[in-house]
Image 1 (tube, rainbow, N blue to C red):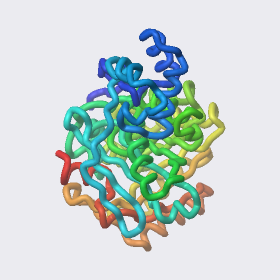
Image 2 (spheres, rainbow, N blue to C red):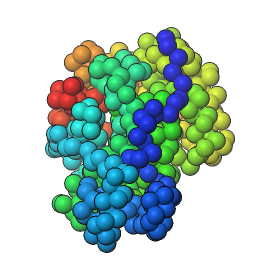
Image 3 (cartoon, rainbow, N blue to C red):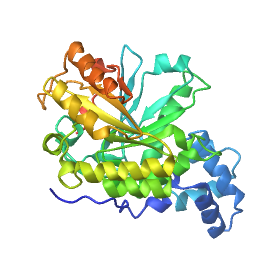
Image 4 (cartoon, rainbow, N blue to C red):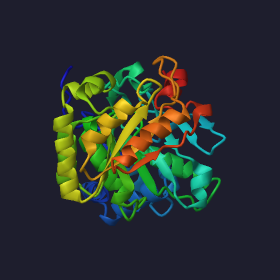
Length: 363
């Protein structure tokens, strides 16, 4: 398998993309254009807190200043191409990008979580994905490019704007980087987007309320532990042996389980936080043998296992296991003293599996 190291986005316009600029960067750009630094703070709040999509909406900034800044900064809102609403409250969105590509974003279980004042958005970090996990619809379409920091934050901003039309007080509280793509193969853009979303002058989403999910890019896990250990870590484990994981998660051929678990321990030691290990269950993998392998692998770690019965994807041929098999798998982990939960099946009526909406309408 080709080696994939974390790398920065190669888009040369990244530093001039308004939604991808930090507040201090906008201040410097204002100074470079003979404007007061506070103009940058004003622009930042309009874009990141109020989620405006045009310069004309920034009503406390002079038209001449807006015109000057618009020549230096590209404001590129995402285009809503399709919205699907599940009966369980989950909402899935297909957004178009400036170059014609498309990505998915999910507001998870909105109706139920609204009552608990928790609004979780699942965002994409790449157009497509180079990893090619066996059960994932995203990888079936191949990899196109990394998203910029502005395109990542833009997903949160577009949902904020859309939902505030229905609920004026709507506020995203949690962000999970679990959509299309491998976040650690777009490391710099993802970490920058996290900084922007965390800003008190913007969405003000707590670092500990954001989680990065990885297929097992070991250098990325180690960098996160050094750079921002407050951010949560989830690992797409899916198997307890290298033999099985090589089949399900090709990244394992580059970073096998011993190396992956070593990096996860480093993260836990640095952050003091447990790692969430995601295990997708199919009718073929939901058995006692696989459960025992996962239990043996994680015994003694600061960990939590999230069992995910797969959403059916026709092209993969994988099917959801029975409730009895899911309960049996969870029981093996519980008996081994490993905290476990089963993710509720959500959004199957709107093809909520990652990549399905883009494959049907966006490619």
